Image (cartoon, rainbow, N blue to C red; front, side, top):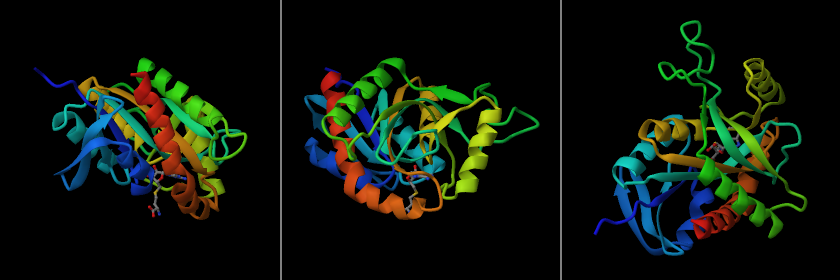
Length: 246
Ligand code: SAH
């Protein structure tokens, strides 16, 4: 009998993943490609948890390992991000419907932001998995989010190898994206890389990010406190809700 393909749940930081490992039944740690992969079950669903570490290359490597070595056919990223969309505040939750690499620029050979030889700038999340993730995130918010009045947003997430921590830097990044027709809600450092690898392999992808900072001059202060105190608990609620719906 063939084993069903596991759901992969990817995070960048240990703090983002912590609670998830605790929620895994029959958890076994497999060391591969310099990383720990936790294989087990949640609500009877086979799940593999992984920590990508930070940045696009680390995320792409981990995604490839999850697909090739662990047989993942569905992938969910859960983590934190900087809010750059209007009204996207610390404690809010963003579910990505599309993913763009804000630091991709092979112009004038290819249009700014386009991933060369794919013809694509934005990789879409899988419709079914994303809808389930939205429901789970909404439920977690109703259940008592990290901050009273926290809201769920859905839309574009921009990724790049840069911790965005300046008002002017964030404004310039957003203005450049907007001038190419892209309206980002959040910036982070992994999502669009995972989306690209998943697209190559025909693997369903969805991502949820809790907003840890506003990508402004206080981002480096807000970020660690938020990740420690809120993000990991929140990831558990959302992933638990998602897995129950599968
Ligand atoms: N100094 C931190 C570095 C974290 S980098 C540390 O000690 O670990 C930030 C991580 O959170 C990345 O994985 C990224 O995806 C996400 N992130 C949160 N806020 C961000 C922001 N303002 N800009 C870019 N990435 C952000």
